Amino acid sequence: MLTLEEAKKAVVEDFSMYDEWLDKYEYLIELGKNLEPYPEEDKTDDKLIKGCQSRVWLDSKVEEGKVFFKADSDAIITKGIISLLISVYSGRTPEEIADDDFGFISEIGLKENLSPTRANGLVSMIEKIKELARESIGSKASTDDVLTAEDAKTLAPLYDNVVLALKQVYDPEIPVNIYDLGLIYELIINKKHEAFIKMTFTAPTCPMADEVLAEVKASVADVPGITACEVELTFEPPWDQSMLSEEARLELGLD
Image (tube, rainbow, N blue to C red; front, top):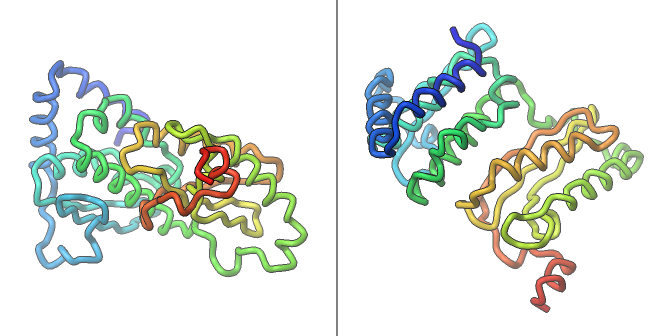
């Protein structure tokens, strides 16, 4: 089996063989035809990926420390996209999947050449794959790991420094940092000093989403005392101007 890096490189090389995106769409359709049959009885609502215009079912299981995915969709292009993703990530360790930036998607230009609704669906597929991987290793903060009130008081400077790091990251379309924009929905630091961040964007079609997520993870991971950082993207609830801080409202001239 190819390593993860080899598999991603192979996808980039495969797509580079085609000059026109019409040919690349045909390639995606062929990939979708290669998906293993997904049992009809398993096509339940809890397996549907939220955020996709078409219906996409995704399930996973862990065997011998590796995550294996199965999927299906009722739309041919979308079926090809999810097939592409699981062909790269199925059979990997959960740590490999959770820590990967899925950067090869940008290299092949897939998101930029999809309709806005399909691009949103692609983001949702990536988010769900990473979520299932994180769940399999329990990387989300558990009750035992979350700081107590006393712990939080002792480590308040660490929390404050993480907030300062987040304030160094700016939205690519609005000249305000992501923290004051209200894009950070959740920030948890557990007893191991691991940071867990749930965030959003002002619009699901943000063209710089991957770059911003990578910058957030790198900025927080560089904070002295932080041992690891996980960033989860969500669009529930959707962002609106009510989430702006007072500082952001003043800066944007909204008050």
